[in-house]
Amino acid sequence: MDENFNQNNLNQGGEGKDLSKDSGTLRALIIVVVIALLLGAFYFIGFGGSDTTNEEVQQIQDGEATLSVVTDKKDYSVGEDVIIQILLDTDKEISGVDVVLSYTDEIEILEAGKPTDNALNQTAAAYLQTAQSGFSDFPAARFGEDGDRKTFSFSGITQARQTITGAQVVAELLAKASSPGEVTIDIVFEELGSPRDTNVAFDGRDILTAVESTTISITE
Image (cartoon, rainbow, N blue to C red; front, side, top):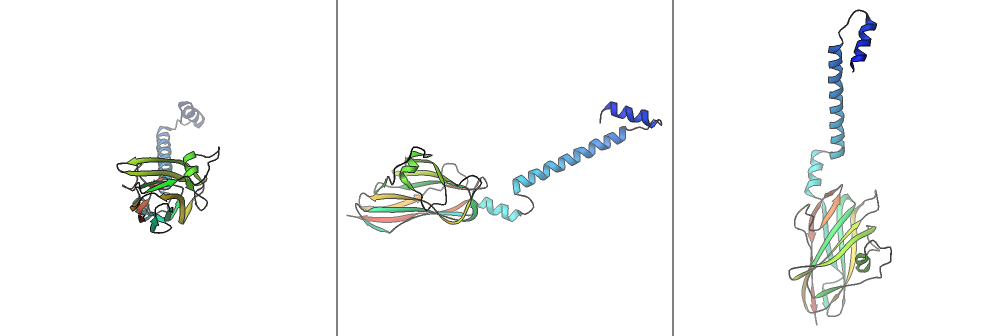
């Protein structure tokens, strides 16, 4: 409240009432209300309102999603095609994934299609088969190496303001059995929330709980 407002009230009252105490009380009340509103907004944004319990928050932090890699069979001959699927299983509303696959030279990932000019990522469009996927866009994909192992990394996202849940196909890859041996196809998962490995996004957090790899055998 400003000094002119206080002076006008004094002049109009005619009895010289001291409003300084009332003004101080009002300021204090306004500050308390503002703090309460800010705390309420912070609680709503951070924890989704009163419907989210402490137990549910802990479950989200601990992670509740599994990614697994499977193949169409376990035994192959050199030259045969190997169909690789990455599967997601979760009871949360998922908006995106980052997947890092690790494998050895006994298999070679092949191009599965011809990317269009408007593809978000040419490598993803060329190598990922996504007709069965619950994710609508694949904005990143690349090949790499990690010691004596090869890697193939990609990201999948849903459409804006949409999510997926339950058991889902993330993507499919076509590979060739190129030389004899045993091959373990891993999903790289170091720790929850790491930006360098596989992640499953729920409400802006990584909730990946576990990954499951697969091993195939290739003979002449």
